[in-house]
Length: 365
Image (cartoon, rainbow, N blue to C red; front, top):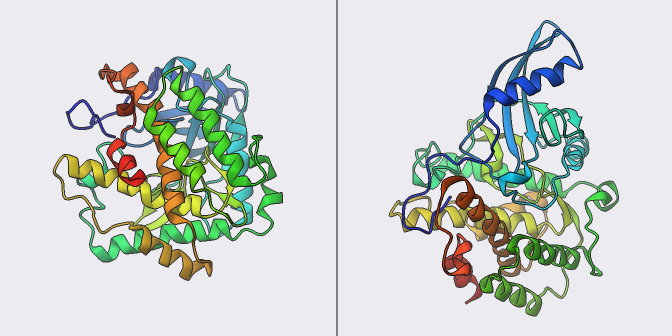
C-alpha cells in the first residue's frame, strides 16, 4: 500500500516472523495427528495481498490424494497485529453458515479448525483452495495489472459480479438471528450505533496511547451526522473489496477474508467496496499512474446494487466517511507494521499514520 515517506509502495510486504520452512514442518506434524501417512509437499506464503491474518498455501498428500488447501493463521503477538482479537473459529463459522445460507455466493468450504495455538504458534483454520487470480494490493492493482489491461466491459463484468455477491449475502433471510454471534457487545440501541462504539474501542487500542486528531475529527463528524433511520441490519462481509476475491476470468470464484464480518446495514459493505477502490486510485495518482478513475464509482455501484437487490441504498456519504474512518484505524496499525518489518520511519505528524489522510480530509470537507 502507500508509503508516506515519499518512495513508492513496497513490491513485497512482510507480514510475519514465520518462514515457509517452519510452517511446512509444523503443518506436517499437525496433519500427522490426523493421518500418520499425510505429507506436506509444498508450502508458500503469498506476498501480494492481505495484512491481517497470515495466509499459507499448501499441498498435502493424504489418503492417496493430493489436496490443495489454504490455512488462515492468526498473527503472532510480535508481528504488530492489525486487530486486538483474532477469532479464527468465528471466522470459520461465519464462512460455513454463509455458504449454507447463500449458495449463490462462492465461499470456500472450511475443512478444519484448530483452536490450539501449539501446532503453529497461534490458532488457524484450513479451507479448500480455489484457483483464480486476485487484483493485487502490492504493487497496487491500479499501478498496472491484469485489471488495468482488461477492457472496460471486462472490468464492468467484474464490478457487477462482485456487487451481486454483496446482494446475495444481504438477501439472507433472518440474518439477525442466524448470525446473532456477529453482533458486538458495545453500548447502543441499534446495530450501527454498536458498530461505531466498537470502532471507538478499536481506535483506543490501535493508537496505543498516541492520539490521531484526524481520526477523532471523523468520529465527531459521524456522531453529528448519524442517520436518523439506518435501516435493518443483516449479514455484512465487512471487508468487501475486490482484493478479497479470487476471480476466474472476471467472475467471482471465491469470497475470502471474513474476519470483519458483522451485523450491519448493507450500505456498510457497499460504501466500503467503493471507497477502497478510491484509496487505491488516490495512491496511483500520487505516483502519476493513470489507474482506473472510472472503475467502482459509488453512484454506479449503488445503481447496480439497487437493480440487483431491489433496495435503494441510503446515507451513502455517511457510510463512505464511516468506511474511511474504519480504514484509517486499520492503517494506523498497518503503518506501525511497516515500521516494524521494513524500517519505515515513524511519521512526525500522527495524522500521517493514516495512509489516506488526504482522502479522509477531503471527505470531511
